[in-house]
Amino acid sequence: MATRIYKATTPKGVRLIDAGIKSSVIAHVARDEIKVEVASGHDIAELVGAGVKVEVIGANANQDLFVEGTQQ
Image (tube, rainbow, N blue to C red; front, side, top):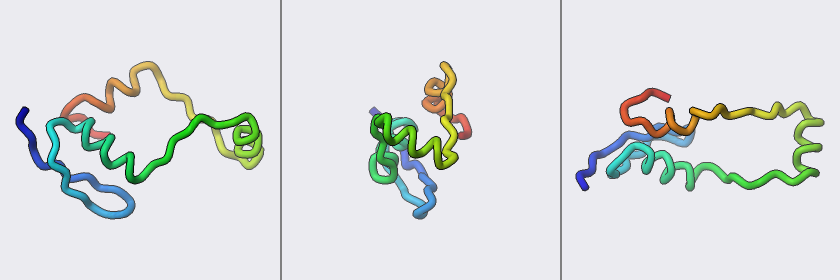
């Protein structure tokens, strides 16, 4: 598989990533920058009580993220 160099811009700075597809770059950078876990009932109660809104992802959201050449 051919690869190309992608420029990934994050709040921490710019990174150059050699990868085959854009979604691989996103996953690679996200592993370093984001921690995701299932929220417990206590987490939800505490965060909603503090004013954090629950964000709902639509059915096509993941599809758009992984289409080569789209702007996010």
